[in-house]
Image (tube, rainbow, N blue to C red; front, side, top):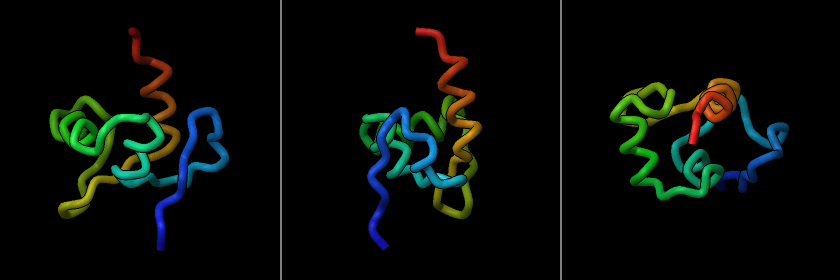
Length: 68
């Protein structure tokens, strides 16, 4: 099954649980950057076996709390 194309601002298009590939595409960062953020505990995700999963609402909350 092909990955969804995700775009910021279209929360309804995001599934409840997001793969690291879809999240990297959504945030417009490289997959390796997303792995690093997840492994360092910077991005709020859960590792299931060797795969990372992210909950849509947690990601939106995390993004709203980030100060740049």
